[in-house]
Length: 376
Image (cartoon, rainbow, N blue to C red; front, top):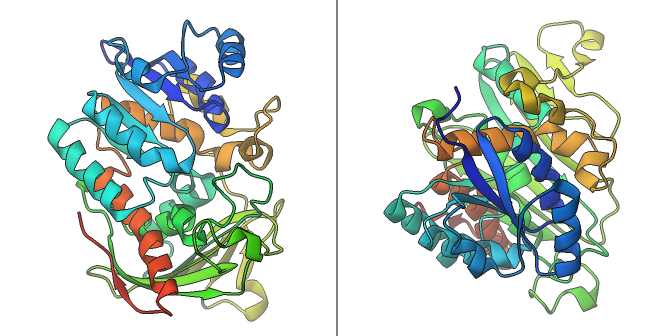
């Protein structure tokens, strides 16, 4: 359904963020009106490349622009919380790449402020709109999997050489890619029923290089956590690594269920596996081709779920934009900001997904003590 007026969006941060420009430009209910980056030469190059009239180096000046309804924040992790708060105070809808923030205080402030101002907030979590996740979620919703018994997420990535706020970052501070599917699969956002993690136990393992430790005081090469889900007998396990761990990049999600279990592919280029109970042992596992879910999107942006051959960012080179999730994220945000449906994840849900990781690292630093997750 088209809206009488398009949502006028500005994108903040033009590394990863630039990938979303053509999607907003093609969306029938959105208009990309401005971009923002500190580096003026790169800002001007991007504005010229995509034909964008307004280009800001000053975020505060952008927020004062009355032509902008919403901002999509793709800035460095330490900026997410402060920039989100400024945008909400300026009366803008906010989409923000993960994580929501890096402290409990900032997260609580965002949730409370969003409720006060009444603007949409959505954390742009890619995994819960990837084709693999959408496939597993569809199987569960149709009853194919049966009763979910256990959930597992894993996100392993080598961050050496990335910008200077990354070295030594606690692995679980950037855990939403493996936490989110474990909670989203049990959620029904259309009915406002979103699964919530209530407590977490985490252990750190191994040790990163000594020169990486002082910035955040985190020594662990790997952090592995289990968390309890409120009102459920299901427990989820998640594992994260960022430095000094040999592993091909992988964001993955497994569902162990009573009838059929789903396992994300182990390495790039493989297909996921379904395990069907009751068959001869040799027939239980089978690889499956995951369908594209572009039909859920407006026709002009469906092409963005597939391979974008002229892209240079890792997310497009490794699987068409995080499993084809980018156009789904844009569409969900635009529809939510225009009042057609709830944001998913909304502010409280984004807070919970992010807090699992923050509290997990706290648990690891305390030798595996159980930590209650604040509920906002």
